[in-house]
Image 1 (cartoon, helix red, strand yellow):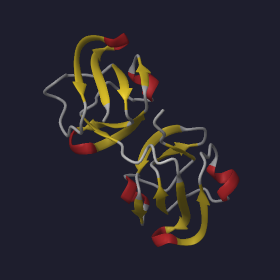
Image 2 (cartoon, rainbow, N blue to C red):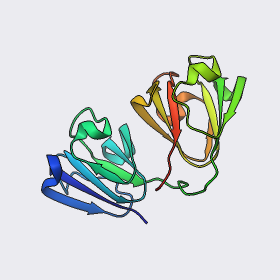
Image 3 (cartoon, rainbow, N blue to C red):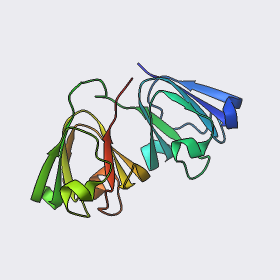
Length: 175
């Protein structure tokens, strides 16, 4: 189970909405979102309804304004609880080419700079063997975020990216 609370204003002020399950449409509960409190679980929130648009991965904690979760604006329109965050085991394989071709490396730890270890500037496919992961567009966990749960991703579009740039990635862990 998870629990997330959305607030219309910064610093947990204004109208709020509490959620404990996946929600494909949040606009009937609030018009804007400027702060979030995650009381339990790990969540992915989306800027548009039906789990599309920019993704933001949130773990337990307080986010007093949208910049704290690296948001571009105050638009949050859907959310869902992330599964596989308490497995204790994390493994991901990344590939330099689509369809699991080319150079491959397997990781079980966070990676703040993909190029330094992988030696390729792009990741075109990957396989999540254990746990849940987040890809970041830039090194040091910056830029657009992409949730990857257990499964196969034959092309970068499968995880929602417009290009193959992966600068860093980390495990999603519930504390």
